[in-house]
Image (cartoon, rainbow, N blue to C red):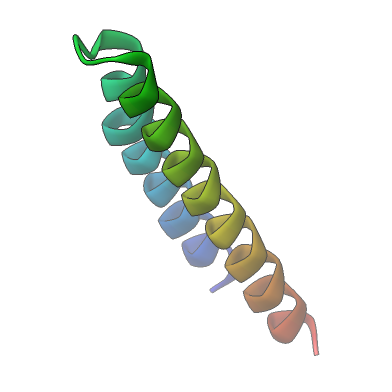
Length: 61
């Protein structure tokens, strides 16, 4: 079961990376747009990391 959680979160990290970092690097918009997208992507990573840690800790109990 624990490996399934790790696989699920790995897929989620890859999705956030693909759809989040791609627009930051390849966007033709202004710098403000890139900064906003970068902040949103960083927030998504923080939420994923927080949820991943909580779920793994609960599984150990």
